Image (cartoon, rainbow, N blue to C red):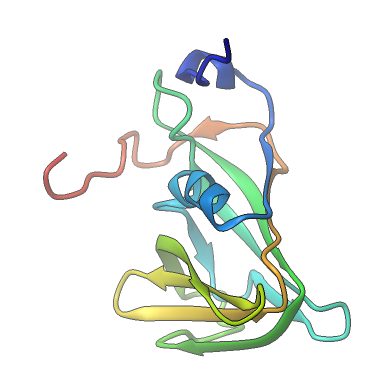
Length: 153
């Protein structure tokens, strides 16, 4: 019998998760909810066909104390990136990620849509779904000292 993962399983270990199928993406989406990043911490490598964000994500998998960790969210096989309400390259503009969703296209193509607070969005069109989330620092106490709250929490 296979057991579901528990909060305690997260411990202090760095996460490295990959989604290759649409039904795997919600796991990563739930972990990047409420992540924040400055406008200059996103990069599209057109030649390498990779879109990446350096995020400060809330550690939802750790139920003990309000912690954040820096993580890289990578979307491979990116053929087009579009945004609205986002000042790319602005280090002073802090963006907050609300959701990450998959919009299927034809023959395995589609788009990863990152919805941001304040009506901003980033749409990354891809030839195939391949999204990776990798923690790159040790966790640190969230500066607010609080868990993000949502209506109905």
